Image 1 (cartoon, rainbow, N blue to C red):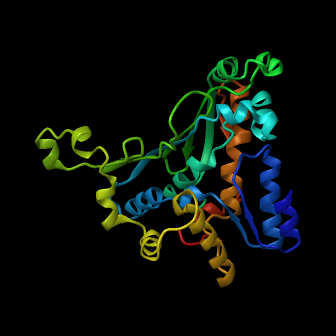
Image 2 (cartoon, helix red, strand yellow):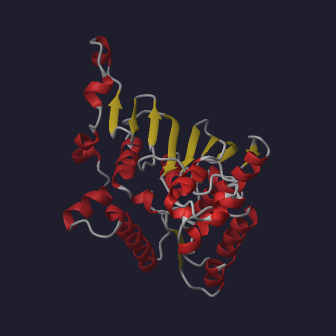
Image 3 (cartoon, helix red, strand yellow):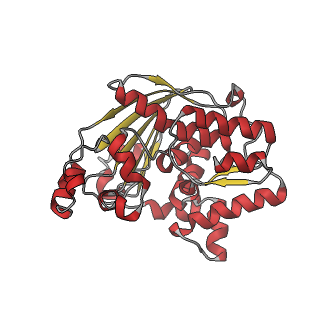
Amino acid sequence: EIALAAMYAGKAVAMEVGGAYSLEDCYKLVDAYEKTKTPFMFLENCCFGRRELRVLNMVEQGVLGEIVHCAGGYQHDLRDEIAFGKENRHYRLRNYLSRNCENYPTHDLGPIARILNINHGNRMLPLSSFASKSAGLHEFIMQNKSDDERLKQAHFAQGDIITTMIRCANGETIQLTLDTTLPRYYSRNFTVRGTKGMYEEATDSVFIDRKEDRDHDFDWRKECSGNADTYAETYDHPIWKKFLEEGVQGSHGGMDWLEFEQFFQCLREDSPMPVDVYDAASWMAITALSEMSVARGGAVVDIPDFTNGKWVMGLDTAGER
């Protein structure tokens, strides 16, 4: 509502990430932008991560070949944050009690969408989402908040693991995983698979398929695990090379600074935003759509084309990718 009010008032918008509660909200954002042409940027900071931009650069240079499949996740142990949501007035508690969906898709989907040129010559078509049972939060509350009689008796609608599969117009597939209520380490599980190689965040590894390696029984796990930094000098994105020279600053490892810098640069130059309103609508819509799919036992649900066909030739609002 704040973003809509700002656009209709002619105030440039930089909007924080999240999942949409309804498709109607996504359409309202697009309609407001198309009526007002007010500058709008979706603040998905993970699109500006060093690893994500390096892999994007490798993909654009053909290093990984033709991209076939990408995966990502919001894999973040939030049990303490959710269980103490009442004390901290945190929205997640209410959501986890009453909703069952891929509720935070954009950290993982954003960088993938850029790699697959979503809304810029490609688009997401159908999705199917499945939810595991909900057990993690109840166990955590019994062990760590046993004096909270209300939550001890509560049934959490949100499944512990939500798995979403998406098929794209150009034939690629995307797998998203929400994993926030079981014990684990933090990861966005950023994975890109191509005909010539892959990147895998779990081991921070790049594997390039070479005939000479296959001829000598090459052990990928042994030889490549953790090797991503060896590709930095050659394939770091120009944005990051400049950032490193000037001195990295800002939170989240510099991602926040870079996204703000891009926003204000585009405002000053009156140029298209790198993450625009169509990206915002299509990425946030995954939450509402996954909720529909989970409720129907994993039924296939169509993803709307918020560009109204403009994705085929690439949006004229596209900024520097």
